[in-house]
Amino acid sequence: MTETKYASVQELMYELSREIWKVLGLAPDTRLQHLLNPLLWPPLRRFSEWAAKFDRTVGDAGFQEAAQELLPRLVNHLEVAGRQEVPTSGPLLVVANHPGAADGIAIAASLPRDDLKIVVSGLPFIRSLPNSAQHFIYTDPLEPYKRMEVVRSSVRHLRDGGALLIFPRGKVEPDPAWLPGAPESLSRWSPSMGLIARAVPEVNIVTTIISGVLARASLRNPVTRWPKDPRQRQQLAEIVQIIRQALFPHGISVLTRLSFGKPIVAGDREPRELTREIVEHAKQLLNDHLTRAGGAIGAAS
Image (cartoon, rainbow, N blue to C red; front, side, top):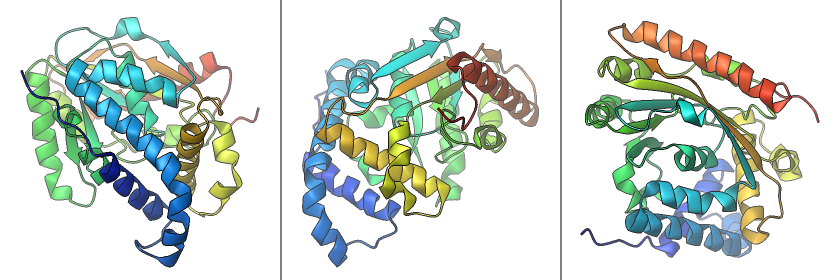
């Protein structure tokens, strides 16, 4: 039996604080950082304790159970559609939009699979979760030469009959519940998903759309108006939301909706054709998803 490892709360706090300053565009070890860090420590400690507990549960009980345990801290209510469409065995490629960090937890908690691996960024915070590492395939947008290694690792897992979750955009996307630009972002999904699928002809591909990862109150917070870049504003809104959730559990309402599409079998089609079909499926699923939610992209309410 493999011994459970333990993530360091202090290390997680340190890496999380560095990521926050990076989003804010501030260099490490500035005077402002030293002044503000004491104010951030309480919520950062609470969130890092959640992350450490999540990682410990991964080692003790598995990734899905850990995700199901953590999810209520991040999402007040999760509505899931199409779960019955997801194959419970055999190679499975789940391709999803990426409006925020909680989307991976929500999807992992909802998939009827205990063999899931996720292609994730190689941020130091994520790499500081030792038990979760066996469920992650790390990528780094700053090191494109590693992309083929990510493809090879992904194909290997699928050929072993496993489930794989990827976010083909490779970066944070607009939350369809509140922000414009979600359909356009789907059109920019990486063609690597077609390469991965083509290498495993029997793989089932399930497009996935998630929305409402961010609360509207977080996006409207005055702090988020500071950055000019929309993506940076969205990242800052996520940080504000996490801080509020850590300080005031259930003090902010987060209603998240998740939709799984009907499986597509890769077969012997060319990667480019597969990529086009996946994107079209995702766009149709997004339309259906928003129709069920009763609102359009960026609609006011």
